[in-house]
Length: 404
Image (cartoon, rainbow, N blue to C red):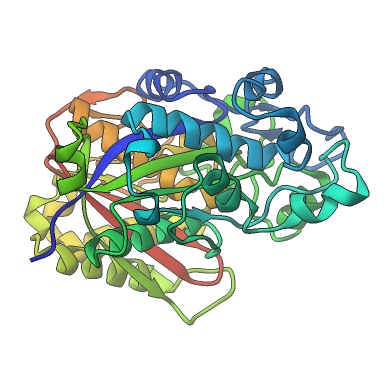
């Protein structure tokens, strides 16, 4: 019989901080990481705000990455390496004591961020900086791990798909430890202009911290965030053998492709509902056992409406009993990193018995009538939680976490 897959370590770099503890403190406090853009001159852009990683990151990263390697990495790849090393340290892993053939790295990567804002790129480093597999490769090189390392790209669901792949690798006895994560930044002139042309981004620039408002009547699009999140998945047997702290169990997942539209989700959240049902089926859990949902919650008109409808479709009358909150209200949408960053927040919610809030819900959409945990965190024991990630191209993922 397959053993449990557990979470033993985590690392985050985001607009709310450069380490796990700072991020968790700020998310619980309902802080916003959204500010005016400084990475380029956005004064003529329709959208002038984003969730940028704090300015001290460049200096901070020097403690983690040697100078020569750093010259071959983008800012985004450095975020991934920093979050990975923090996660390994958090998990208390000494890879010299492990069988490195059974240690793997899977990263959700949409792009490496080698855009117009990347500075000091030399011709010989252009290739290394652009390789979409570079994040998993650098982490694998750091610890000389010889299990598989690779990247997954399913748009905004990329690192949630990576979590599912890591889960399968452990359940299928192909690995004992998998470093799973994602890192991303699309805070650059060309991509912001592109998303503005699709009417996908918020243009409510003032004040920046109020722009990301999932489930609000006056939401007008998502706000871009950037950062990295890395989770250490481990077989229960390996974790117990080395005396690790276990933060939660990753109990199962649901993945689906909508086959519907390159940008819009299926009408009335049909595809989202199918994915959540699939996730519950994979674990054998009933709808009444779910205590919390960390929503995809982007602050776009269609996502928030259809995700709400999907939750009602899956959970029926129980839907109104389930707290649902959006971390993106504080962090913005971290694209390829969102699945693991939100997976970390969900894990810590289970571990600490704290439901993080949806901030900026001053003007609730009357059609969206679930318990969205407005403004302030809530102390509540959670036994089972879902984390949703839905991406352009119809890539859907729901990850199920269970209290250990």
